Length: 480
Ligand code: NAI
Image (cartoon, rainbow, N blue to C red):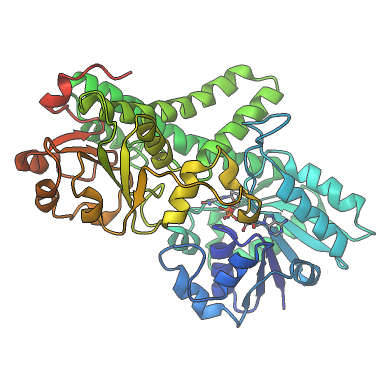
């Protein structure tokens, strides 16, 4: 029986391994992590991450051919294939701080593999890593190998949170990069055989190691670039009276462009886009390509601009001050159908409003109060370290209340900001909300989920990203 071990039981390691176990009953899969609480949660009824469909998959295989454990050494030493799916955060200190990937966790995983292995192994990079990481990992493994042979493969993950299980069941492609040697090709074939249990062969792409590593960074950069492009257009739409939804539709019906990822919003978030683009920028700079680095940097600059533009709209519309006013925040996760708040635009928007002394009442169907307080007090990039290495006992922000109901959040509020596109926000009783709010009552829709015309009829003053402005907003000072 083939044995797989995956180091890192996070958003990627957990779902990917659960799906491999489900689709390959003949393979035994162990997912290991240094976080005791995370492993305990994977073994309980309350999984550590919220992902539609995940619970059903885990329940079908857990205890049969899917195991979650903190015994990293045992499972690594027994495995034929070791996936490494640990976090690769942005460095916060030293050379490349604020841009380069911090490979501390990756390196320590590689050292464990080298230390405990007693048989030849295929080591698979599942984490998103800088191009050429495999070379460094190879050096760590071979220098400590005691004659054991390791083949390194790059197999970046393209799942999207919120649709991870669907994406894993039916991937656009699986990418496997390896050495162009007989040993490398044999390893590629072994991993291909795993995916071939359910992925059609023509969707399993094989490349050299560096192409696979770089393709993941490139794919995330292209995706984020589309969002920044449509968000840049949204600012121009507001200035000219064009409607960004109409513009995006007209642009996206061109088959060369396509309709996906063209929704204007308050900005992109998530653990990957910013981190991976910063990493790409750093690699370009290190390779003497400052113009290329500058080009990709703009994608992040526009994203930051979009978030501060939103905050400025809120403040400017409400008589240039939100001091002591209650603002309801609907949605804190970086997108719908996940509880993940890593790099969510809600953090920057909330911090911006708090900077102007607003009182916030936050509701998100999947995010806990503890997480929100952590996010609002944590330093940039600290979130991407295992919880036990994050700053202890974060202080709470007193002007922030976290509530478990949209109506509670909006009661007596002067304004409400929609920051995540949860389906339930489309169907709220906005008349009831209007009646319970201070007047004039403002809605700032950062995800274009509400029917602005209907809300205006009720009496709301509505701002929707990239849409023709409410007469009220037109008279307010220009947004920087
Ligand atoms: P995560 O933070 O949810 O999970 C990483 C896990 O690795 C943590 O539970 C941590 O405790 C564990 N870990 C760290 N060092 C360890 C070690 N030495 N031994 C054992 N366990 C260790 O991170 P996530 O989101 O799963 O991301 C992992 C990688 O996958 C990152 O490189 C990310 O860029 C990439 N990725 C993430 C996607 C996403 O949607 N979250 C999608 C595609 C790729």
